[in-house]
Length: 143
Image (cartoon, rainbow, N blue to C red):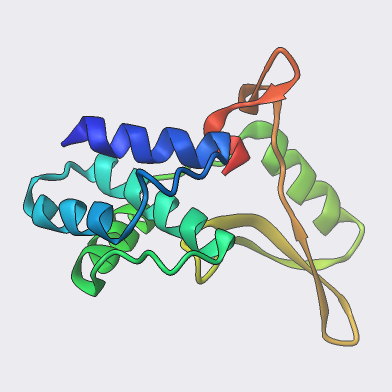
């Protein structure tokens, strides 16, 4: 079951759509294994589902599986880096108001949302060197 999650996630990262593979039958096969996915597998399937939505695909996991996937994704722990703390500290030092680790509807988190006036907000994502390999973003950074 982890292998099918890995395949789904890998196609998402590569942004390669395969209509012969990803179809309603595929979503049905995933649904039939719903009780067997690990937390990691569920988080990968959540990212795959988001990718399907981004593509405008009509392929959807059943609601119960989508909920499990999103829950696994948002309950995954996160940590703030020293670089992120330095950036947030710098923004605060110049007097701007911000919220940290803002949860989006997709389940992703934005490192900070800065309130810049007149009700406008700017998202700030701080990605240090651990998000890149040879100047190319890692798979999780791409998604």
